[in-house]
Image 1 (cartoon, rainbow, N blue to C red):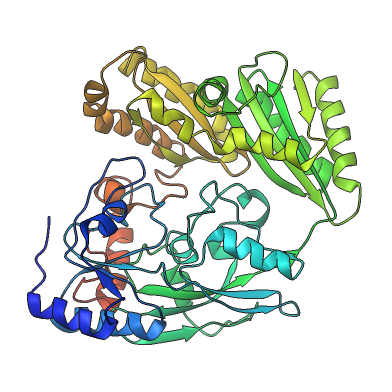
Image 2 (cartoon, rainbow, N blue to C red; image 1 turned 90 degrees about the horizontal axis):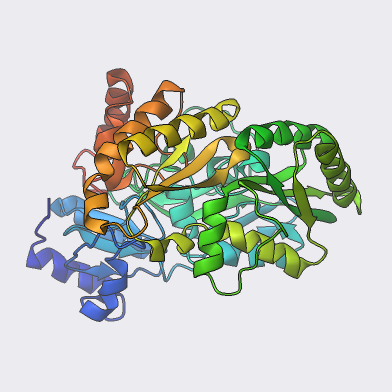
Length: 469
């Protein structure tokens, strides 16, 4: 459903933003109205480009008073369509790029919403700290979007989701008021935690304008290995051994099927096969430690034990940073490598870690029965139970025919996930893609409670109105 914004509202918005604070230029708007996978194309009467929190408050105040819907966008890296407007005013945080503060005593970095994740990493490194959230899209993904979608990534196993890494927020609420909750506190047990409501709310409860982020020490040692193995069952056993061997110092434990590696070799320039022989499955493992040489020693012991017990078929350990980046590039290019292969059904699911192998076996059998010839590219975060289970059209098949079966295929996969106590959206959120589908898997009690929160904070439903309940 599209909306119409009155001309007088647009004039008021332009006035408060100034000449360089808005755009209606089709060329300027085009990249912000197209989702990365080309699945959604939106429209907007105005692109608002605030520089400050005061600007954001002025925009939202006008929209609240006039009942004008607004969608907020960061780096446009979302994968469920929530950032693409369908007639709403589009508020981009791209010009809010200040690092306001770094504090190595409190281990806090305060970044505005438009700072990229890569920018945060650079600012933390400049004071010999690290922000342990890793995404393949870190060069484009912004802090506002990362917080609003409660982004996951490759280091959740050790550090948790985004909500575990945020100490405080500044946000403009749907009535245009500014809430300054940019605290440095590890402990604050004084009632409802408003920042946690805003984290993962996908822009429905306000516009996040800045965040206090938790920093960690730089590690003294790091080991990265690519491991070839026979099945996800072996990967699960290896994960347990990895945690035991390191005392929990596993930074990442990423699973990939061979088909995804083949796509990377075929479609991503410069990719090299990581091992001499072909293996059905691969694990990319990373250990780190504050003690020099400790991660490398742990990795050596872990791999030796895995080979001795028949869990590992082959492995290679990166000897340089360049080699580690090359191994990580294979994992990070799993999604981009699929684009030239044609239509794909994407599933961002999670199940208990203990059931990942079972899910993969059952889901693949179900997909082979439902869509004979479909190609399964499964990969993801074995360490936290999050698998990106992607079903590509049969080789040489019709994109349109495959796309037409997407919803029916998703129902099969998601019903299986639900039967295992899992989630139909592990880290991407619901957006416009999964909001209605989620009603099938959430209880009426939960949906009503979530809806009541939204009604209380955004009674006019102006904030990202197509998303969530």
